[in-house]
Length: 348
Image 1 (cartoon, one colour):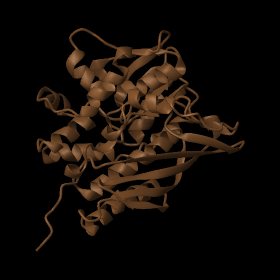
Image 2 (cartoon, one colour):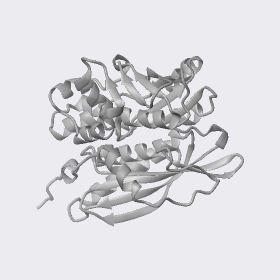
Image 3 (cartoon, one colour):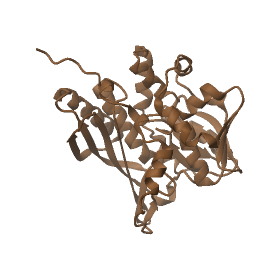
Image 4 (cartoon, one colour):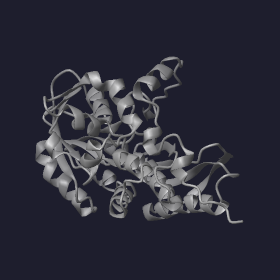
């Protein structure tokens, strides 16, 4: 008798970067730790919740190291592998680094999923790493209750071009490279409300490598870069605000959004992670009257393999937008600006 086809998303309690532990809970967990050794060569550690660790090895080279893994956000195994790999490599790009190689992190319910399906997940990761020009040089596998896949991604960056999430300056413009709404689309997929063309749009954005990162890092007018993932635009922008000691203004109407995201929201389709995100940091976000409902959910929507968020000087904006467009990011938008003030976000 042939084995019944299993939907990957039905095997996991959450999907994609929506699986991340909520910021407030994570803060409490980390508060109970004693901290680690901080050598002078460690240029970036845990101090500003940045995208990756950076360790200097000489005057012109520093290692960028990161890891990301999660449960399925889609049912197609190859697409799951592609999305997870793209998401993991993104943190290297966000630091201004160039990827060197990756290690695979694989946890699979081997008695539930056909081995062919597991192989297709791994092949999806291989496909993306090949597109990024890097090998998967090893990894680790376990038999787990839920399917888990991701990468350890290793890269290099010139310390002079390293871009942290804490370097924004007053007057900077905020540029977002990808559309928001991935978490909303994933909720629609679980409810069988996502049509083929909408699914294609979600996969297209989540498998687009954030390749402008290393080029943007070479621009003096680019002061801070991060990528928008599980904590939503508001959560990752707040990390920029806190690290830089500044306040951000976000222009709601300028946010690039996947075509049906607002429609799905009005139908009540959203992830539980969105509410957990708001509970963690909502007191630092002020939303203009009349925008509270949908704007709040869009800002907290967990993005899997989301876009780069760039804080740059006004006279560099045109060059930044041009670089994104040259790399195929047709939805890149200026979404706000940074200013003096108590760290937080005003949405207008």
